[in-house]
Image (cartoon, rainbow, N blue to C red; front, top):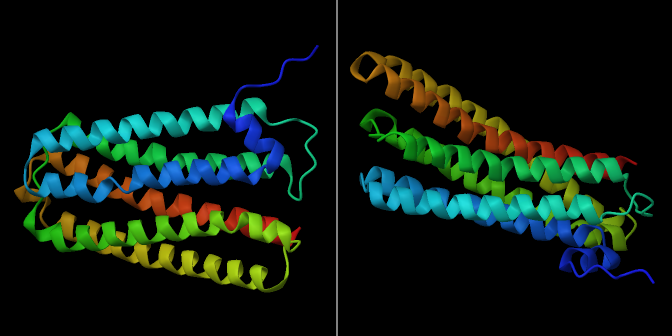
Length: 228
């Protein structure tokens, strides 16, 4: 007699292959939501709180990683779905990359005491704001997956998601501009900073930009779903 899986994720998969994808994205977004308080603690030079928020990010990233592994483990190879199984797994990978990148940012801030240069604070705030907005928009797109299936990937829901995809792509383009400006500003003050700190700042800025790239990848994946 075959034993039933006790995994709650397996139960979700029997109902809809998109439910665990949505649950995973919510977990990923909760990870990203710790970036503002993490950077606020950095601004205040509160290393204790920086470590605390970084630890929370690490815990949530681990939970998201476990959800990803469970999804792969319990996803039947012969699952009948409105989208290709491989495309769904790639979407999961794109989502997970956001949590991974968030953890990388937290690890940078705990591996070295970072003092935020006054010259880049305004641009860093702008970059963080854009990062939070595009991450939220990516989550909202994933929340629409069930509705898309119900209407057969068409109708008003299709038009709604197409508009959301356009918003994410525009946001990613705007974030690229912010990245260029903040890197140029950092370049102009390099001589006044510790060389190692400069290296870490470039890494941190690049990782913040990577989050928007992953969000755009999610939008591209959804566009692929809609075009099939």
